[in-house]
Length: 405
Image 1 (cartoon, rainbow, N blue to C red):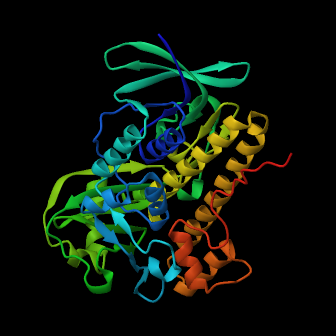
Image 2: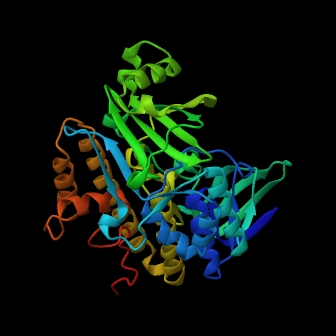
């Protein structure tokens, strides 16, 4: 069987659903292939405000509000020389002063549903088998449904939003790992724990402990996502299994151990070696978006927001290059440059922030040096802007969609 579309998107997570939905909204025929059946579990529950504008663009911000997720207005940290401190997104003067802590199964299912509503053909429980190429250009994908039907789908353009599976990127680009961010995480869920209160209500809580740090994310009904992150090297030197390591590090904490007042519900989960970037983000007929392109350490919860911002930019990019194929190479180059530039800033900042022995003013000033070298704003505001997934001075994806002729 052979099918034809304007665009094929591999992957139905936040990056894929956003890209596909916004393309369909522009009148393009879009096929989205997803290997799982939604709703499905996924880690990465704490969002930042940079994604809220994309929810507006998709027309579903109010629906996200109606799902009853916890509003996240900022963060509270035990990090650096001066003990516990906090920030609010509103201090950065964003368009939207809060984000959400979400159940990813519900959140991602809503995004995929919206893509369907906007006209995307969505096929779940589908395995992409190979990339179709002609004369050095990607022209489609071969896929197999759960029922065993194998199909070739042709397209004017292909988007890889398949996360770490990288169903297109794996065939077309190598991956570079960030060696100084080779970390692992072990996490679980706890119920009836002590919530943050007052101005900290809804905040993600982060506490540094020897050799690592914890996240503590309020989700719903008193449930909290609690995870410990450490370098692979430090965890290996600890000489114990990850579950025991988690419990031992909780005991070493100052604040977290007093907050874990309720029982753990469910088993521990773990992941490791997640910080990487593809060498190439785009090429003739294809582009990578979200985790298929790169993933950065979860310290500042950038994953979902960067995926959705990139999805929004990718949709605009594809509309432009399909209308003006002669400038495809130029537009793809701008996409890759802007994506890598923002990633470099985030990676540089995360690496610097992992030095937990500094004054918080040092973190503010480093953020300013990255995104506001002219010092047009106060350093604390630049810090908040950066970790909101935004930029004070220009769009993260500054594509310049009117190519010079």
